Amino acid sequence: MSTIKLISPVDGSVHAERTPLTLDAAEAAVAKARSAQTAWAARPLDDRIARVMAGIDALEAMRDEIVPELAWQMGRPVRYGGEFGGVRERASYMAAIAAEALADDVIEDSATATRVLAREPQGVVFVIAPWNYPFLTAINTIAPALMAGNAVMLKHASQTLLAGERLAQAMHAGGVPAEVFQNVVLDHATTEALIGARAFDFANFTGSVGGGRAIERAAAGTFTGVGLELGGKDPGYVRADADLDTAVDGLMDGAMFNSGQCCCGIERIYVHESLYDAFVEKAVAWVMAQVLGDPLNPDTTMGPMAHARFAATVRAQIAEAVEMGATPLIDPALFPADDGGAYLAPQVLVGVTHNMAVMREESFGPVVGIMKVRDDDEAIALMNDSDYGLTASIWTADAGAARAIGSQIQTGTILMNRCDYLDPALCWSGCKDTGRGAALSKLGYLALTRSKSYHLKKA
Image (cartoon, rainbow, N blue to C red; front, side, top):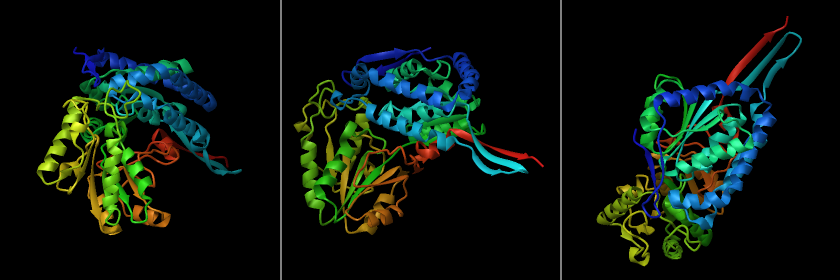
């Protein structure tokens, strides 16, 4: 059987290599998870929560090892220190609301009858995690699934194989039994075969639209629940009353952080005509202050993209846009680390239209197109002119206007005066080609449990 290789974007070397499980071995792992899940679910909720949170503590204790590992695996600069703050924020919030979210809803408790709506764990939850935020995205499902009494099997992206191993190491150190939380290395064929055989009770996938379609095809006819967080082309809108400097700082960070490889990163910006010229000027200055280079250097603010082929997609989008009339405002020569491979200079494009792939297809890289708009109506129409719908960011001094505009935008989350942020108290979901499902918040527990009704007639 061929191995799965993790090619480091830092220098193109093979940073890690693992042999995927055979189908027989994978089925045996699932059987162990299913056998162990009943006893795990029987533990008191407070005990399960304590063990998961102890796992978070154990993960944080590995910080000094994990931060450079992330740089080697997917290119994020060490200066940003990993994903620990967000991991704790999300896990802690889900722990805090678990008792309420999972509590019985007593409809009647009288002398004649007791009627109750209860929640029970799904059973075995399968998490297919992406490489761009390998801990944050995984913990969205792992923490609440375990807290709710499920067993969890994690298949991490080949680009971040070591992240899956770290999560397993941490959870086991925290007291989650090894059979209850398993990190498994699987190829696509085995993954699809397991889903198609109804090995899991729920499958959560974060990744590409194509990958989501493959998961849906594999699950077809099995009635396995699936949660899909897929592609995005998230817009930002700067109204005439916006604070210009705040909008530039927020939106450009949202577009360029993590080399643009963020699920809810900003990929297109619409600016009211009264602020457009000033916004573009400041946006270019913001980008020119970035330092592209070795992610292990603490002075670096932008590392390489996770793989040279991802950078090639972005370069092709930029080239097509320029050929169609867009103007690039950043000279790549001013970023000498751009090597034509994984290291890619950031780019700002103007003169863009929605006929260009860079404004319609997911880029997932350090490029953003900026368009001038006349008013809210034009901005709304352009924001909705997309196959995706994850988040939309509105920059304005008027919260009422933001709410009114947000009600007309086809997306999962509306953010005002911020972007590229996931609030664990709010449901993380999307529409259109961004997929379906619900993560975090009270609604996240509904996806990871199933309802059971009790009608106990006494007389």
